[in-house]
Image (cartoon, rainbow, N blue to C red):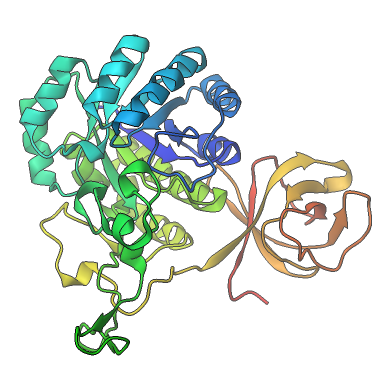
Length: 410
């Protein structure tokens, strides 16, 4: 059995730490330019250096995205950026553009290169091509089935790695190459500035009746005609492993620490259970599904893995997430008498029952006994986002534990 890597996204230094603590084998991040998530917080060079040091101390790798489809004016900046990355020493670069690939090979010859899903990786000939040029890994197109991935594995060198998305948002366009955002908002999805117009609601206007908006319906279900369900393969770990996939990739560099922790922790346990004993994996299936359901998501699909998606892979009635739990904060420091400090993310109050989510898989129920600000003043509630607070739950709480509450909690 090939070793399976769990690859988790991080859009900020805090989320990187969360990904590492909650079970990632590797984390992928973006710098302040040349990645495909311009709206994520992203990392300065100093934050990259700090994050890579944190990860490496715990045996976790860090990959840096540079996967835009570059124009001429981008190339000098890419050269300067890679010169900076040489000092930071990421474990790999994720690249889609051959011109950027060439610059990376010249400036960072010792750094592994992974070929992004943006590079149209749909057949074993493409994998063989990139292997000859020196790529370590290719990220499969989301449009491949498990059978196609098995065929690719059978036709490529044993030392070439396959990375595939197993969880997260799907794109309406082929492997993310989309012009909708350019056309409707003037922001280039292939340069990292996508406005996600596939999630918008649309109406129809007839040429001779300007200003008269007619709704677009799919039967009785609504008007969100491009809105895909999210990918979730937690119930299919055996099939993914059997197909020869080396790295299970989670989508979501713009997600919260709560989302990253919940997905990382769940897939970590599922992978470990399956590799330890397949019967254990089957035994814990309801736990995996319950925990994944505590993340924000848009309903779930298996994407293209078992054939081309049908109309059931789209959500026609809404573009909102299912959100069963709210993120309250991550424990930053333990204080006296069982208190701890957090940066508050969403409101909670004295007397509320909340859940403490631990990296080892435990969830503790606890009642909020005390809230104080940094000056020691007591508060009845925590209504101000990003306020640093000292909280007492009367529970066993440790640094990196995450606080969450049910959205319907009183």
